[in-house]
Amino acid sequence: MMHEAETIWKPEYSVGVDEIDAQHRYLFELWQMLVSIRDQEGNRRSRRQAILSLLDYIDLHFTTEEAYYREHPRFADHQRIHREFVARVQGFEQDLENDRLDMHAMVDFLRDWLIDHIVHTDIRFFNDMRQIGANGS
Image 1: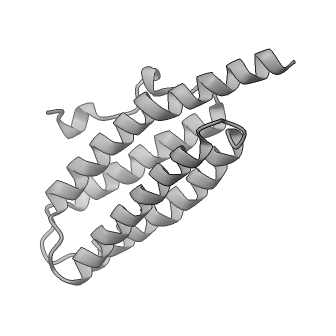
Image 2: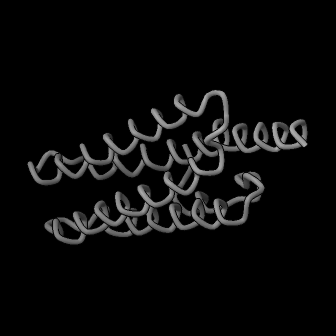
């Protein structure tokens, strides 16, 4: 398992679109903010604000990202994956409200999901869209 200090933006996470890469980097910054408050017991307000900030930003990011590949044949599948992730993060926020949130499990899930989704889904989708664009012109 990776250590938090190693989980920073890496060139191999680039999708080849500056706007999206910048947003992905910011998602990692939000993740690192959650790591920094993970062990602060009794700091529900900071934890809640961090989760709400993440939810706000992923809404912006997914809207931006989806605009790039709306014409992709599997657009609906990718959009569904995004919606499932949003629901999962909303569940973390609800768990926090009900004193059931495992911050360590949440932070690990977010790190693993972000890296896996960028590397195995986003990069493929953006590569496909470049191919579609090249073949369509």
